[in-house]
Image 1 (cartoon, one colour):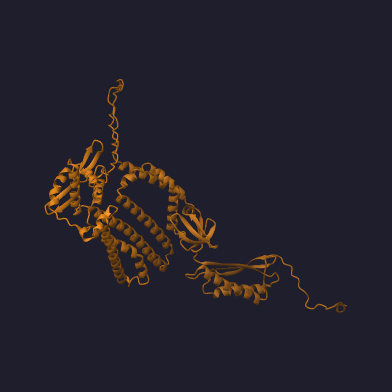
Image 2 (cartoon, rainbow, N blue to C red; image 1 turned 120 degrees about the vertical axis):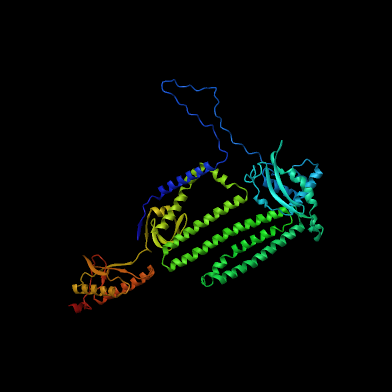
Length: 571
């Protein structure tokens, strides 16, 4: 079957690229922050017959308001609420209370400020009702709460004395600009709440040297606890993952008996990762310090995000495998290629979502990032014309069903078996066992001949009998070859015929024409059956007393049956 695909995929792709660029540009224009506003112009109406009014040079002109420039970053990270809290916890965890006191909005002396920083850190270590990872990383703070712009509520600490709201204030310093500091209202209540709590010293259960020796500002005894917690998480996650796999094998064995074990094995890693993320989140609630709890929560979120993406990719592979097997049983080979292409596009979508989630977790404003593309989105779309042309070309080829994986075809003058139809190119394995990659945009535009889509195989043979073959012998050969085709169970008798098509100088030329039609037959089985038919034709020609010859004039020299042995016999 020959597909003459002359649709202009390149022109369609260019149009789609320009439209996508315009959409990105319009999105950027609608989501850009702090737009420049100008004063609206006043329309001037001129009455007929009156002189036109000259513009008044003394009238004030509308001056566009410049967008506010962001302040320079603070060296201590106090430009945002998240940076202020995390910087304070890191300094206090390293027992650098002089540095931690710089995050307090206090006029106390240096020793008292350091003591107040120690007390505030101890209260935060007790646990809060808010995760620090949700704090705003913007200069202006969170604009969704009910507080004023210069205040930010970051946590609530509960003790026997009641609840203490931990609040940050944005304070303007002469030499430091506007920075976020722990508010004075919060600091005034810290000593009373600190006095109402009981402080446990876990270091007394370990040798004294483990408190003196530190690694990354953390004492050794804390590292031993972290290592034990990680090992317990891994052990429990491994046991729970095995339990989940055992439940899945029991639940799906009746329905997916041939492939259930291989499918469950593919889910080992994602299941283990999701369970590990859950255990990390539980371990975060038992962390000794607020900074350790913050790191445990970040670790659990990262593990959960990667494991979820891994799980979706594995489930996509399993779905593709079972869908391919089902379509093979239903003889829907053309749908297999479509399923493979869709699965790849879905995996790319998963990776894009994963990258966006990681950027969001890192504090990057993704909407601003997309808005920053602006008009550059058009240039990006135009630069990706070839890539998009190959993508849409592959979708076009698959949707039309012109070619499928494992089809034997001729594409762009190359003949071979289709190994894969990817997002960008079609891979063809030639008869020489080499791989040729052809861009999908070329496949969509060029002529493609698919041999695997033949509904019947063509038996077409021509041969020439000897020039001295008699009429009766030719008729006998034609009748017996016709009988061979008629008796073959897989040859379409309605299309089979054997005829003398022309007389050549070498002899009569015979054409054998028929279609081999067998359900599920491939090219190899056709060649095997055609070989048997050809051998039978040769036998018929030999038994008829004639032979096949080349289609050209041949001079035959035949010796006499009896030749004289010597000269005396001739005489």
